[in-house]
Length: 81
Image (tube, rainbow, N blue to C red):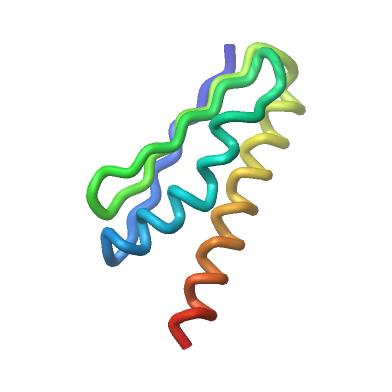
């Protein structure tokens, strides 16, 4: 099994909560053999990804997750302006 643990730190709890909520739908709809769990603790967002299939699926999942985080962060930055 392949496993990744990703920790992201933010300046405020509010931003961390927004990012965690933005990527949370990924916790529900995943193909068989794939597990994604995102949680927030304080100003940090933690994501655990487990994959029992191909390395390509694992890498694509990490890439998709980080892309979703990037979109959430850019959206929050645009809203602040």
